[in-house]
Image 1 (cartoon, one colour):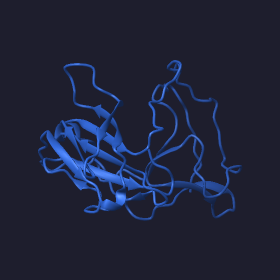
Image 2 (image 1 turned 30 degrees about the vertical axis):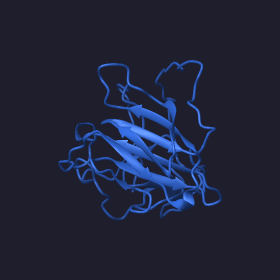
Image 3 (image 1 turned 45 degrees about the vertical axis):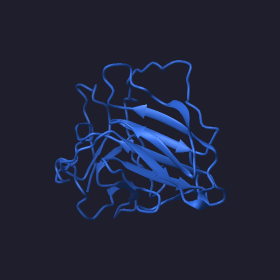
Length: 217
């Protein structure tokens, strides 16, 4: 519901926090009157992740009224897409489309806990589709070897996934290319504060009885 070149409105000027918990953020097209606003209200129980513990916070359902700036020139109704990630007594609503009326350059939405709204002037949006879920068969090309000599400099190595730090291909002291860790400072860590790095991974968890050899300096 946005395009490259749209501007994010800073906190207090189109983005911010809802009165009873939750957030909203707005993007505007500098070349037209189009805009898109996301409204999110997720409870603390569903906001946890592997980062350091979140501070305590509470959210409550509420009806939110958004007052648009006069320069917005909003249409008579806006497109609304709604999903809820904390509905357990029935199938959760996902990407439900509706509209909301704009009166005196304002509109109102009931925002329950677990909800995410996209409110936009863009009318061409639609829910994606696919024929069928592709089958999965984990595999990795064995035998595998790479001396990195054919990889362009300053690029990532194929099949490697950096976890702590950032690894790139660069010439080593003998002139040959090698995989080099480029971040000199300890990065911001998650659960282990980055003390177990730097680290980059290759392979798959299904591997058993695999032998590997590495040349390093």
